[in-house]
Amino acid sequence: MQSYSAPLNDMKFIIEDFLNSGAEDTLFKQNDIEIEDFNFILDESSKFCEEILLPLNQSGDKEGCTFENGKVKTPKGFKDAYKQFVESGWQGAALDQKYGGQGLPYIFNVFFDEMITSSNMGFGNYPGLTGNAFEAIKKSASDDLKDLYLPKLATGEWSGTMNLTEPQCGTDLGLSKAMAKPQEDGSYKLTGTKIFITGGEQDLSENIIHLVLARTPDAPKGIKGISLFLVPKIIPNKDGSLGEENSLSCGSIEDKMGIKSSSTCVMHYNDAKAWLVGDLNKGMKAMFIMMNGARLMVGVQGLGMSEVSYQSALYYAKERLQGRSLKGAKKPEMSADPIIVHPDVRKTLLKMKSLNEGIRGLIAFTALQVDVAKYEKDKFKKQRADDWVALMTPIIKAYATDIGSESANLAVQMYGGHGFIKDHGVEQFVRDARIAQLYEGTNGIQALDLVGRKLPMHNGRLLRSFFHEVKEYIEENAFNYNLKEVMPHLMKSFGRLQQATAFIASKGLSDPEEGAGPATDYLKMFALTSLAYVWVKYIDISNRKMNDDPKGFYKAKIATGTFFLNKVLPETGALMSSIMSGASSYTKYEDDFFKSSFS
Ligand SMILES: Cc1cc2nc3c(=O)[nH]c(=O)nc-3n(C[C@H](O)[C@H](O)[C@H](O)COP(=O)(O)OP(=O)(O)OC[C@H]3O[C@@H](n4cnc5c(N)ncnc54)[C@H](O)[C@@H]3O)c2cc1C
Image (cartoon, rainbow, N blue to C red; front, top):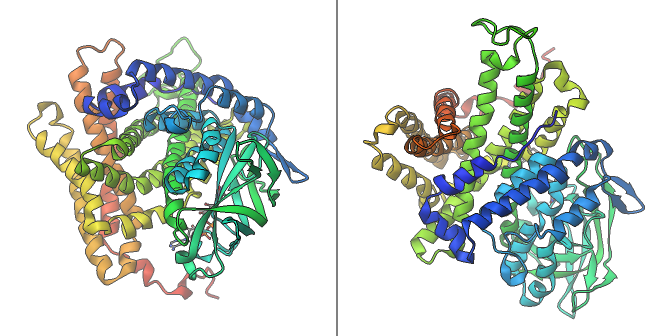
């Protein structure tokens, strides 16, 4: 059964306990929002997810999107749900008030997106990119474009899409062929085909604003000749009313493994009217604003899928009666004990739970840094926050989505053969969660971004935003009695991470393949160490709050964290061995040896 109730207690713990009072200033004072209001809005948004979106998840998966005469029909109930989403003002909750948003802290977005994904990942993809399109336009477009497009994007009446991929151009965006020709009035005419465009066509919003990468006729070859263009489905008049249809069309939609309720479109642009966003040939810079936000949000999707997988697995583990506890019957009045009594089942559940809670804290702390980087006056603090976000984005994107997929598979395992049967709904999680490891740059590419770009950037300055933070914390808490059992775990994995970083940096200098080869292992090690930092802090807070713990929340936190540090974190040891043995066993493996048959 797809079982989900929003983890509001955990979210409130993160806001009120984990992100300390200094953070509250950035979170709430900035826009005159009280924490009570924030909590109220969070409660309301969780109701929207549980009551409106969750009931449409399985039916949306079964029905999928349909395509006829260039139009996409979303599954039954989606139109109404989107209407409610817009009318309730959810789209603009964390967007700039100047353009009609409500200015809530960015952390609201990550909590809300997590809940939306847990309830209905397919639906979430429709409004999902609009906020990121809003930010890219706000940062890079002319004032005229901002004034015309941002207010309607902030309400969700118009939605945003991101057009990078072409048939011959996926990871390597320098291969893009789409062409935009300048016109006398300052606009462009854009021609080309983009594939896999999420929400490229749908029947939910009044207008669709496509942000499209293309080159101009005299542009340099490769990635340096790419510019970003805004291409509306319907060209708005100056007053924002809808004018004539633009020269673009949806050619077809994909029949996919999962997120079937989310339309994935082939888009044809045929001399479509387009406007430049940002500087000519600097499209990647402008698009990166959208992509970085989207990458963080895809990481949040990983967490959302992991959370609903955990909750659904837990539900079944308490319901399903099989076998007896090895320590004697726990439910003698029943024919058998629930499977949650079995050690292996408990371990599986705790792996999911401890990863989810840790990842939630890491994402929330990173979301706070997004706001610090935006609002902080102190240049050093602003820089440090910006560096943290840039460093953590590929780590969160890749690791959280790997865990989303792993938890979905563990949920199926928990249900035994019943997990393989559609009615129970957990096999849908496996199919839905899988895409998050692929889109917004595959997870392998995230690892390369971490090792190849983020590590050497500004002579290691980004790295220092994490290393200094953790080092300072370890030093400050060297004599913290509450942490005597757990701090050694953090120190050990932190030491491994430092050693692995130095090894990769020095090896990579003489042989780039030695740097790139272990990138995925390194990213995992980084993620696990970051989660260890989060968990040690959680445990520290929980120890101090134990005297006022009527519901056992803090006791549970300590127990979950102790499990994570003892049972999940040791993976860093295996990762370390693999990294330190170098990359030659596969980079120097002869191409011919890959063949399966030597006859
Ligand atoms: C459902 C869905 C929705 C999508 N939504 C959008 C969207 O809204 N907008 C959009 O523009 N795109 C979208 N995409 C496209 C998606 O972002 C790409 O599929 C993804 O970035 C990978 O590109 P590719 O499929 O061409 O794979 P390729 O680039 O062909 O990669 C194939 C494999 O090779 C690996 N690889 C490639 N280059 C390297 C390298 N240098 N080093 C190491 N490994 C490498 C990759 O990791 C991957 O495993 C969507 C895709 C899907 C399936």
